[in-house]
Image (cartoon, rainbow over all chains, first blue to last red; front, side):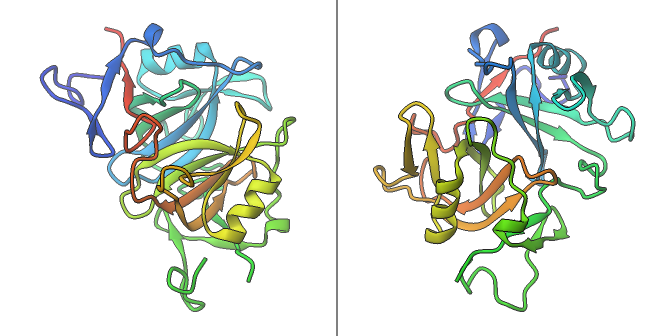
Length: 131
Length: 131
């Protein structure tokens, strides 16, 4: 996190609670048998969930190093810097990890649509409830 | 969705866009080789991401039928009505599905902590960036 988003004397909060800052090695991230962990991407400020994608160890490292989101494309079997082609690169504000280390949450600033369909969020369909 | 949250003449929106309402059969949900799909749980109104858990076909059906979240516990190998023990049952406001059908987003009203640690959200740790 840059000094701009996290001054050394500030406390970063999420869901109304102060965040615990942990080193990557101490985060205990559990990659699945494919070497992947799901990452929820959320717009800073508005809270919109934009997409869910998968990170491997290398994309996680690149995300932390560059401050932009990198994922592992399961269909193309390659590393993928989100928005590098479309211009809608996601600037990382914070990378959170859940209680048991098997899910990540990237809080980002995403200038444009996150979905390949042109929608702001990949979540543009709701399932109709019966009855 | 109850009439209260979705009057028949209302348009449900997410991320500033109207949602497409789809039937479960038409949603094209892709369960993985274990028969599971990840489900992000988000608090209605505040946008807090509370947790990510896994649904199988049966828990998805129960969620839509009961209007509360049901998951498949990978560690206990059983269906799990979130909050049934703690009392923090999550009331479903909407169940969204992403563009390629391999992720769900449950927008809920969760009265209390969602995390077994007592934290409001399972996302209470941030990974420190190097440099």
